[in-house]
Length: 183
Image (cartoon, rainbow, N blue to C red; front, side):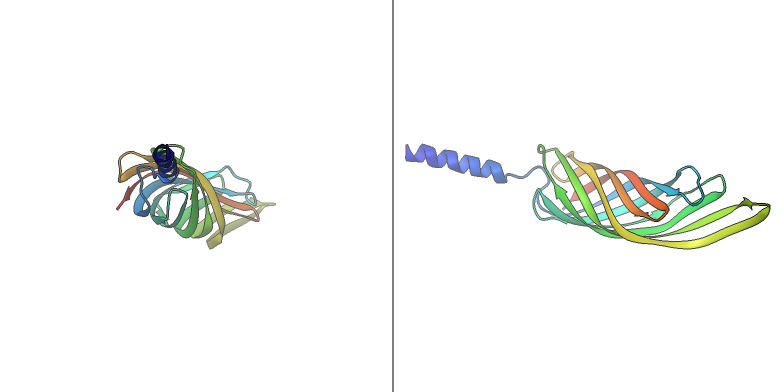
């Protein structure tokens, strides 16, 4: 009788701490991100830029990890009087996961991002021509949510939404898809 109870306790405790296909440890990945830039000051439509991002992180367990990211814009966009080009971006984040199964891990992520971009605007106000061409630096708290999909023991895919910057009249956010490899 005691052996049966002890066996059940062992099975239960192992199932509570059993990991998914991604074991704790380091990983590296790459994402394609479509960054969206909104500027209420110029009252234009959302600008959409293609961006390449490299991610590296460490998962302490199935629930907690840290991640660093760096990326650069690979295209710019313009609408109306406004043109935006993202030169580079980087940041550090804390990642909290809640594994639904061995293959699907939804998560929330939060941290701090820094970006540099070029904003250009040309137009006419009250008959006066104006031109703005400024390098802008954006930095602040960032947050988002996503899904990690484990395809094999060491290879996975990712889908994520991030709000990188939201201050004053400007907002920078992004939707990304990517791949990652644990080692």
